[in-house]
Image 1: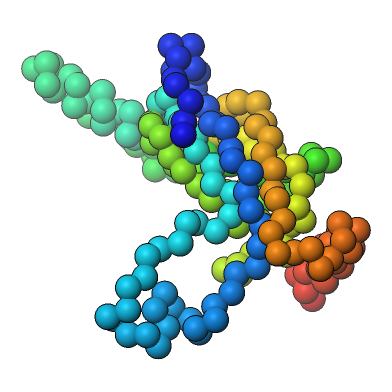
Image 2: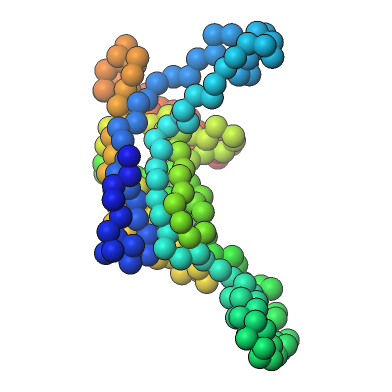
Length: 204
């Protein structure tokens, strides 16, 4: 459960709530692909929990582009019965060329090496995202699977080509399940080999 929000926490620009230990395992599909496989529509199935480490975070304010801010101000002026002057060409051109603000969840390992960067919502309120235990990489699945251990996540904002860290990193644990066949050393060596192979594929 989420902890109680205090007045102080609500004043912060962002917040990441405590993250439960995330069980790491290898996904299996014993009945082939799909949620029902060959069982047919009459076979009841429920969705599994999201695979990975689930991160719950909150943004105090929504991030808006310059155009959205102008339109919001114009709507407020119009509601009060005031004039809404049309912006000049230079302002419209600047709005058109401006990049939209973005928010990312940044995952790092114990040595503060970048592992993955997850796109996050720019809207105010509570949100959830799930890291699938994989390093950043090409393709739908991403790079190789990380090893069990302690990781951290923080929240960064990119606006007008400026990067701002919204809060300090929050630590969480990734706990192995059904992966006892390999020792911690073997897992680390396997990960190093997979990352070297992925880099070779990228260069080629």
